[in-house]
Amino acid sequence: MIPKFAIRAGALAAALALALSACGSSGGGAGASALGPGFDLASKQVLNPSTKTGGTINLISSQSFDSIDPGVTYAAQTWNLFRLFARPMMAYEHTPGGNQIVGDLATGPGRQSNGGKTWTYTLRDNATFEDGTPITSTDVRWAIERANWSYLVGNGPTYFHNILTPPNDPRFTNLDVYKSGDKMFDKIIETPNAQTITFNLPQAFGEFDYVMTLLQTAPVEHALDAKDTGVTYGKKPISTGAYKILSYDPGKELKLVPNPAYNQVSDPNKMHVALADVVDVQLGVDSAERDQRLLDGQADADVGSALTVANHAKVLQDSVLKSQTDDAADSSIAYSSINTQLITDVSCRQAIEYAVDKNTVLNQLGGQWGGTVATNLLTSGIPGAVQFPSYTYDPGKAKSLLAQCKASSPGLFDSSGTLNFKIAAQTNAPDLQNAATAIQSSLAGVGISTQVTLFPFGQYSQYCGNEAYSKAHRLGMCLANWGPDWLTGYGMLDQLVTANGISATGSQNYAFLDDPVVNSLEKEALSSFEPSTQQQDWVKIDHRVMDLAAVVPLMDRHVMRFRSARLTNVMINQAGSGGYDLSVLGVKS
Image (cartoon, rainbow, N blue to C red; front, side, top):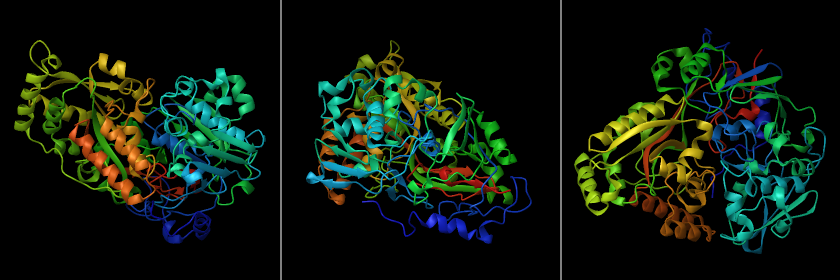
């Protein structure tokens, strides 16, 4: 289903060994006189390939982590970074722009049987935790169980929960494996020996290999964690990758150092390498300060975010800075949900869609360097996606629909006859905040009253994704960026607009859309092994969501990122996280 690239996993080692002079001519930090490799190249080639070890990689982020626990995190930047110390069963190969998955802890893709309901994987030999304990299939099974059926469940994705257990089965609804144990999974996740793990699904699911790329498959030592109820691991995860955690100061700093117990024999494709002596990650840095440190050469790269729009012109007008910059599409979308449980009348939601002037929003998000105006949810990077027109800026039509809504649902309006609610955006994200203000202005133009309110990145889904809180506090719209968990319609839409994305502890479906047509179309898509049939169903879902006005698509994103000229092995991996592939970075002397 996913197109393959010509370069395969083993090609990285060859690329690094070449150390091409054309890609390694840049000097020191941003202020150096030598140019970097060039503008917008990292999604097309490996920049500054090198096998040199040593030095410190200085990463930075304006946000803090939603969790340090790989099993319960759900943000592209944490998925990207945590792969340095957490080793999933499957992973994206290290190629520029790559979207091909290969075996990581697993020897290769799963072996299907029973009509696609049974998937069997073999673990690689000689893989260990950082304390030298051998990794077994039981540890992989436990990692998946604790992340999907315990008190830890919150921000993380729910794919395993939705795929492995029958819907509405009371045995699994409020299960906590720390309290009840995991015997009920003996027939669902089988571990006949230390190297084999078999998943028995209630129905066929053709994309299971993609689910196995999730960090929820990174092993957690069952014998220790089950007794400790996840407390110690959640504060300092035990490494299975090439780096391990040296120290973590929540919201401020994470330091990683090479894991001496990492057995490279268990990693023949070099999916994990530790070239640096230290990876230092500064967290919660004000976005303006973050940009300044990057451009001054004090930081080598941001963990996941774009440069703020305020610095686009500065970078583009300076030949040195521009040569250290990328502006690549990453298949993600900037959007705003519309809370269907708060604004229950579709006419009101459609009025909001027509009232938003997306061109003003685009200007706040970077103009031509930020992307293009979006009209639907499936971005062009998703195989089978079809771009189609939906709502164009039309204040007159918005006012007409608003009047229609007022007549049919007067209870949605306040005592003065005004539709009012809050627009949520993330703290320390000025571009999204400015976009929220632009939307507020557009809505005011048709008589809709709103207030912009901010929530921290790490807890955003606990506010916007908590149905009771969101409804009680009138969070009518929540702005966010969303990228596919993998490059298929399912990877893009399942958690965003279906019932699977709704959770009592923190949904990703901020619209709380639970539509029988959408849910039925998804089941139809997943019952087929024919890619073209699946793709047509995802497009139908896209149309249905737009008809229901549950989401305002704002922009198909390009992300302007900055990289230090001293970084080696720089590439953007579109499918793994949409950012720089942090797993293979090194630094020059």
